[in-house]
Amino acid sequence: MVQTVVTPLKANFDMEVALPDNYVGKKVHVFFYIDEEVQNTKPLLLPKKKPSDFFGTLSIEDGEKMQAYVTQSRDEWERNI
Image (cartoon, rainbow, N blue to C red; front, side, top):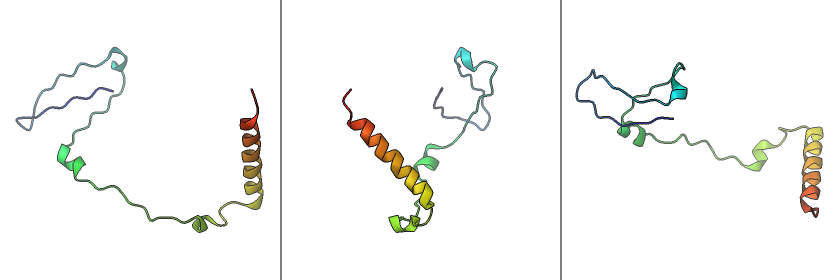
């Protein structure tokens, strides 16, 4: 990734950016944003979830498979190598 900061003095400006050789011939994305715009944005806060909110999202079979996998993983972790 290549990043540079510029301060334009007019609405139109010519800018030359040195790119790595592996960027040549590929689609490159260019973003323009103002630092203050990013600094003033607030993160999206999702509502807090409780474990009970997830009750019934897994079938009994899937839950048993996951528990068997966790048990097997713990057994493998505890072995002496």
